[in-house]
Length: 162
Ligand code: FES
Ligand code: FES
Image 1 (cartoon, rainbow, N blue to C red):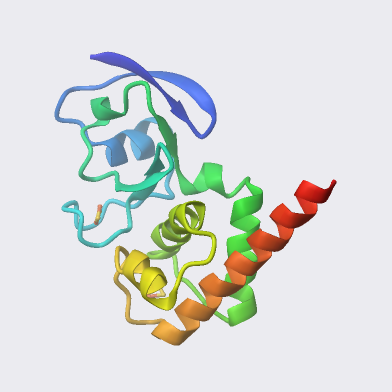
Image 2 (cartoon, rainbow, N blue to C red; image 1 turned 45 degrees about the vertical axis):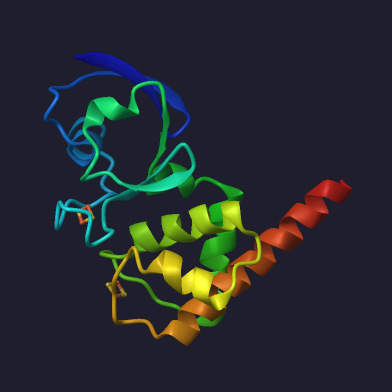
């Protein structure tokens, strides 16, 4: 079937079979390699995307389900001010990510801060549990997201005063 959707801000038209998964469409047709296809059953968080602003595992989504909707991958999100807030917050807290988890972690924090500008420790760790990884301790993760939230709040405050 042929359908259109918005991908990283652009209208795109694609043809896909009903069994095609979104993660494969993004990687193979659009060359977007931010979302990784690893477990393919919603457990690892490496394939996460933002679908209409909410976090979604693209390995679990039949591609046609995004018809008429908005998909943002890490490639698109990395062009935004929100990405700079998150990257800056992570660096400030000394949180280092790797190529396996950076996609999911960054988009998970983006979705969280969009819903909740000042998330609690439990909310942060709850959201980040979508991307399991034992490399970072919970305190560093919490500090990194708090620092990102602070940067975002400052930026929005300055923008509102302009
Ligand atoms: S590939 Fe693991 S959650 Fe999608
Ligand atoms: S899996 Fe990336 S830092 Fe642990």
